[in-house]
Amino acid sequence: MNEPWLMLIVSCTVFVIGLLGVIFRKNLLIMLMSIELMLNAVNLSFVTFSKMHQSINGQLSVLFVMAVAAAESAVGLGLVIALFRTLKTADSDQIQILRD
Amino acid sequence: MDWSFLAFIVFATIAILGSLLVILQKTPVSSAFSLVLVFFSFSGLYAILGAHFLAALQILVYTGAIMVLFVFVIMLLGQDEPTEDLKESSLLFKSVTVLGAFGFLTILLQAALSGKDIVSKGIYTDEKIIEMGGNLKVVAEVLFNDYAFHFELVSFLILAAIVATVALAKRKNSTGEAA
Image 1 (cartoon, rainbow over the protein chains, first blue to last red):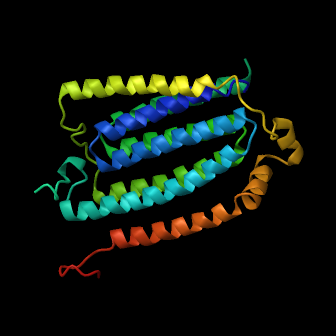
Image 2: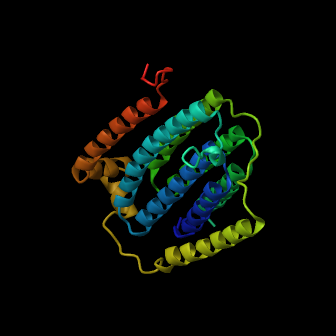
Image 3: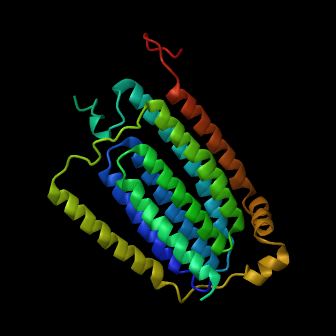
């Protein structure tokens, strides 16, 4: 493929869709999935720039981002389980223990 | 028009439509399966860009490990019925947010595409990578020479994540002490 910059359009669009998901949805699981979408979009732009600059460092960064994303989703899902156990809901609007 | 451009069109369409489905579907299970679709098409996009190792890793790590974790937690929490999806906020807030997101997308695209003609050329051209023995070999060589220390640090990160997850998800008994 001769025009790698076309990938940047996909990357930016998916990033903004993930951002809208985090802002609008209130189910904690879907919010975590939207965060995964944003991380993936950034990974795609890393690989695209790596191709455009004929460098390999972008692909190495993606490797580390993948490790961080795996750790993040494991801890995030642990948090969701702990919240669900105390509040019996996965709704982010119901998390207001500190407010009362 | 070569085959890789056609493949790009197909995968890009699936990626964008799938990520829209992730945030628009009501049940978390349907969102999770749309997310699998997105991950597969991203893997295809990596392969088109020549990052074959990352394409394999995308399927192994994301659709293999992370999605299983997500589906397992959805099952564990019994979140399989449609939820009241949107946050309670005024129509003004929603429309302003969507407009702001479009503005943000425009700025992002302008910033990303402004440098597409003035790229610096590194040493890893396609011919050089083929000559050195393929994408996986080049990635491994750079990873274990230049980034060996960072690679070791990642193992500490994953260890910390394991400890944190066990501490968070452990069942507490009624006196508040860990069982």
